[in-house]
Image 1: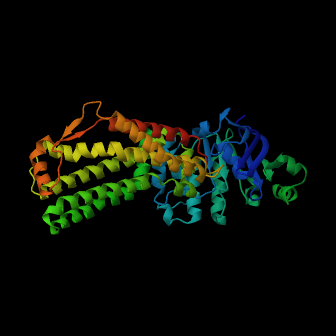
Image 2: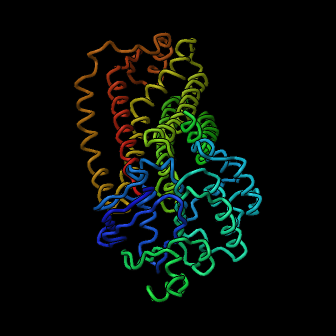
Image 3: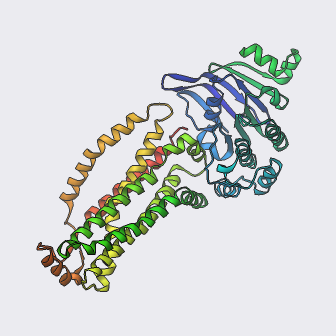
Length: 226
Length: 257
């Protein structure tokens, strides 16, 4: 198994992020992690990235503690986390120096296809910064990609470019966990969908199973979470 | 090593402006020292010494603020990016610390240079050995017993607070650490005083004996013509610094984002 949570609970003081969460992610899946605000999507992805430690239960990635596997996992957080002075070239220097799996050629191609301007992030729009962060993430050759709201607050055309890049860059041995509120746009990507409600799994099903029931991912979203 | 170099480059890009402003502020201090010529002659050396002490103290505060800029990065999300990079916490701490120390060395050696200039302006004769001691030995000794442990402590404090930010109230451990520091410092200083002068001291400014006697006569004070620096405080504070940095590096690996 590539990654798993076993009865994982995460508490922020008295607030619960996720509760008693058990789920496994094998290699080669594109998984949609869907839920309303505060349902535990980000907490789950952060636990898998090793950015959070479970209050109880276990989180394993590549059969080890999540934080210890950080060199092999790509995590794209929802916050706009780049230094204001950073240009795409600076970002390349940063990534090349810290990640052995960073592919400069692929990064250049992604910058071009995502139309990222060659200026400081301070002078970029939110969409441009989002595309730069995605280029940095997808230019790595990892087996597990954790993408938390990469489409949040980004214009329609940029969202389309981002989704296209995710599809183009995906290899069959890689697993992508994508959390988004843009369910209708991303629906076509998902092979499996994990619906979260109040920190627990409300439904975990393949897209094929949902289609077999005559439901789309969006319809099921409304049914399960509405 | 590649990771360390990249993190050092990142520090340069993050804090280069701070370092440049700090080092640039020496021009202001030099101007201030020069203006002291308008003060009565008997008070000039004293006023200049006060200005140099002030420059050193403000420099230490600025350096501590520079190295402790973790809070804004935790809010902005950059700290989370760093937490998930492959280098260990020790490498991150080492890079942050190395850049701050490099800035401190440049700054305090330059302050030592200003002290030399001050003495030269007073018309006191300076031999080459004493100049080297004034501009290198004294700044490095001062750095070792004050600024280096201060920076390590600041770094540890900020990492300690960050470690409790997500899953608990970070202000509690922060307050405990800040309040506990004076007691720890008192205990440490008492220990240093007890241990000092057991090892041979370092003699400084032997060549400046005549000049210092002259300065003592000018200020009607009694100055020890030859300064003897005990070496124990330096070794003890360097050991404390290493321990603080090691703890900060270990805690970094437990910080959540």
